[in-house]
Image 1 (tube, rainbow, N blue to C red):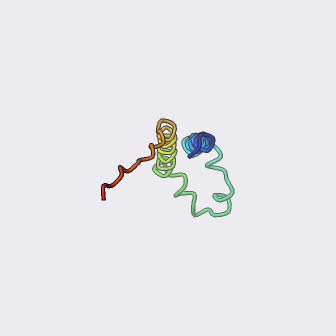
Image 2 (cartoon, rainbow, N blue to C red; image 1 turned 90 degrees about the vertical axis):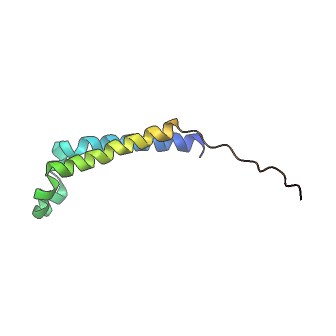
Image 3 (cartoon, rainbow, N blue to C red; image 1 turned 30 degrees about the vertical axis):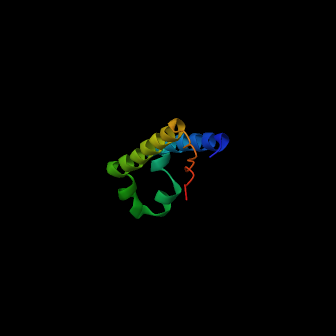
Length: 84
């Protein structure tokens, strides 16, 4: 993976992780299109465990971004010549 694509992937993972970490605890989570049109989802979506699961996915996404940031591309392996 070239460096520009790797940098864009890291930025995308950090931004998505930060959004998933913050969004379940904001006002936007409580007042959105789906909850106003599907009232049966209110009990499910506003439960603290569901909010925690979504925030946990955000934390995992940030850790994956750190993994991409710290990883080095593997060197190409050259096989030794065979003596046949």
